[in-house]
Length: 87
Image 1 (cartoon, rainbow, N blue to C red):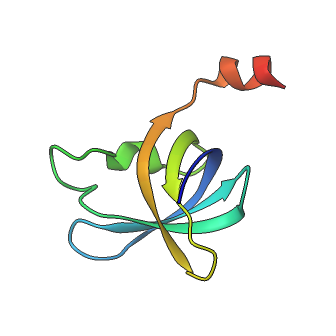
Image 2 (image 1 turned 135 degrees about the vertical axis):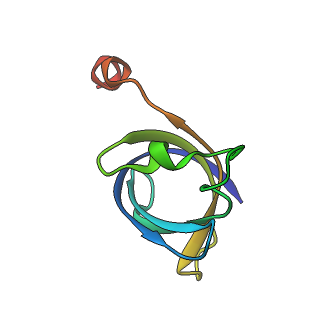
């Protein structure tokens, strides 16, 4: 099921040649691990520089209750000013 949430990138671990596992503290689900394929390719949908520690993201994620590693459908950087205006 697709969910829209905000999150803070905590850690990135290389999974294969072009994939990574990203640990994110999300607003809805707490700390989650997400597998993202193709981030190290030139035309990646979610580039690697977006997944640096402490970056704020707005994400659309697939969340299944009994699975350890989830998937991300979309991710965008969240401007810092927008974060303070919504609080």
